[in-house]
Image 1 (spheres, one colour):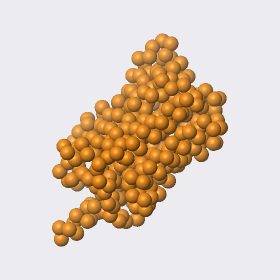
Image 2: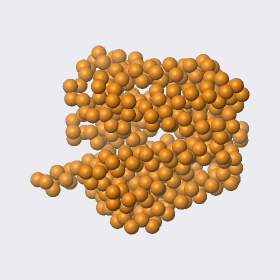
Image 3: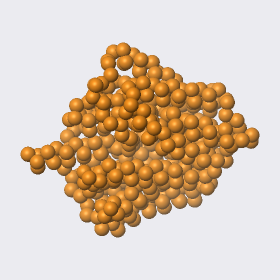
Image 4: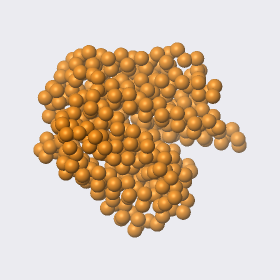
Length: 416
């Protein structure tokens, strides 16, 4: 309990980072509509975030080793604040894309610092508990971020300054914490393509997860606007999907431990396809008729789509040898980011032609490809006889895998 209390400052920083930078993805979409951006422009801005995120995953560890945890966090948080404020300088989609690259870099960097700090301080006895609370704090930040956009005026100088102030607040908990900054072991080089070597299906699965969640998070506000939703109602819509994702993970884990992972992955992909095709067909009623229908389908989307990443990661781990498990985790996040980079651009382009409901057709097409490939891989390779227990795999940074691997190696050397 004492360790958890000492790490409370880090967990508060997680929530504030998610509320500050995390709110930008849907809020930029709403603001872009208010400013007359095209759907392609909105998708381009969203992709900028994931370009920066991928870059932050790669350069973040180097800065942490060079400057230490506290100073590295201050640098990344400052970059995040600049990224937010830059939106008020020039209302142009290409300028905002450039600004969002730095926002994505800041998010990845901040999570790199926090995850490595938590990993260094958590003992084996309470490690699972610490990271469970960490995920709760992250989810809470997402919910608060989605709720926040409901009370902010789109494309407003004041609104972006409020987000910048929240991001500044993330600096305070780490600045005043009495928890001693941990040292860091050296890590091995990043192996981005090891996931494909171990499990092509899992690799495609996390790419599809990136395609789905990135497109939904950035383009769904445009769809909700077309349904007649206000910014507050859009925040309800997005938050309901996140809540669906939180609810479904325990039962998804139970099913993944009881049955063949590929079968469970196939079931969720089928459900996601059905839900997305239903939404894309226009079955959701406009808000003028009822807010219940959009919220129900947002919940169904979260329930069916959000477990895809963890199911894919669990499947890949079944075929990985112990020495490769943590490198695999980093590689899976790399492929997730690749899917998340390209998806909003493609979705934004096509909804400009076919309408905003095409967003869900776009996501369903990705899942149809995943289902077909699942069948192919089931024929090509039998079920693993060494299933590992299902766990919820976070999609934050690649650094956490490297730091765990290095510390495990260090512990093993100490025992020997």
